[in-house]
Image 1 (cartoon, rainbow, N blue to C red):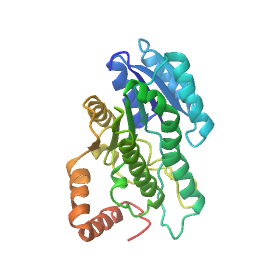
Image 2 (image 1 turned 180 degrees about the vertical axis):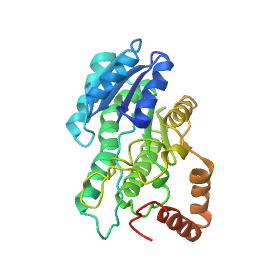
Image 3 (image 1 turned 45 degrees about the horizontal axis):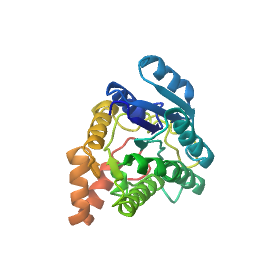
Length: 267
């Protein structure tokens, strides 16, 4: 990864920030997009030896995504890796949620991935680079209370799988990375039924995979040009296995597991 140009969206916190540090340690050049540029500037101070471009980016805005890619090319002249990491979550029953929340989840998670991928694709084809989408186990199994989140992650997986097949003979590497529950602030800023932020995480973050470990695994998968990365055995690989062969059992297990969350919207 030394001197490779890596674009990361949602790089201001959580997995995105950890990915930036992991790539920096390998000598990559970074183009980081996020809405909170002050946090990116702090990261830049922490990594003074890393060549870094900061672009204020709201991935739900197509023009912002275009600008992120255009500025990257102006600065570095190429793109070797694009990691679509930016995303938001939700926690509300579908029967109670305002549909604007579902739309917002799709705009950020799905269309953010579509926009950035669209503008970066010509450059990735030139370098035979890597197009990456960070989804979730929610992209393999429907998580109750998170209809918009699961829908957006399923959509990203279908989108990227199709892009991979379309470019099968062009040398493009496409990775769909699915972390399990990972310690980050995504649950604190998850949207409730009216679109307001949840504020507090309903889960014990200390028992989850760290963002740093998750980032390390994703980077290794990119280096090995894997097509799929499912993290953790129980929450990840076992869940996907049960979904294929015992879907009704998985429905019950998922319901019971998610219902144990404090103040769960369903019981």
